[in-house]
Image (cartoon, rainbow, N blue to C red; front, side, top):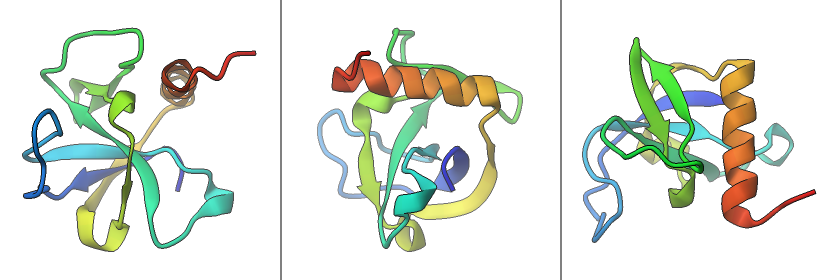
Length: 106
């Protein structure tokens, strides 16, 4: 469901600047378009602040949503346990960041 946060299983195929290691993912895809894959954004506790990296709090720890690394994931293979849900304000900030990186203004 859009705005849900899941533990993201490690992607052993990650290369270059793709995110590796244990982390979370935020579901960004509309609930009306749910299918066998979901568009999600990984998170990072160590990523530098940027206008396109909104900060959320997971388990009391500030975490950045890396919307510039949107990815289609198979939830059955990549999602671990459900870890929470974005607040209304966090969802608004993530939506704004997605619009920014995709150039969707207006």
